[in-house]
Length: 149
Image 1 (cartoon, rainbow, N blue to C red):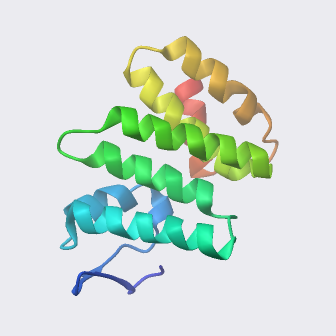
Image 2: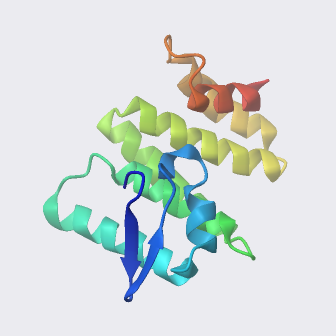
C-alpha cells in the first residue's frame, strides 16, 4: 500500500505509513486501530491469496513481515517468528530472490544475536551479504553490515 492508503479489517479502517518495508510496518500494525488480531488476519489473508493464485514472488517478504509482527507484540512470540523467518529464508533461496533472502537472513540474524547466538548469526548472514556488490548505502545492506560489524 502506498502513502494515503488504508487497511480495512472487520470494518475498521486504519491509515498506514508509506511503506511497510521501511522497518516500521510491524510496529504500525501492532499499534494501529486494526490491532494485532486484524494485522494477523491481513497476513493470513495475503498468504492464503498467494497459495490460491500462485503468485508467490512476494511470499517470502510476507512471511518476514509476519515474523516482525510476532516480535512486535507485548509478549513476543519468538519461536513462531523464527519459524516464519526460516520459511521466508528457504523460500527466498528456492526462488533465488537475493533481496528477500537478505531481508529474511538479516531479521533471523538479529533474533539469533539477541538470543546470544552471534556466531550462528554471522555464519548465516555473511555469505548472503557478501553476494551483494552494489547498493552498499541501501538501508537493508546497512542493517546487515551493522550486524556483521
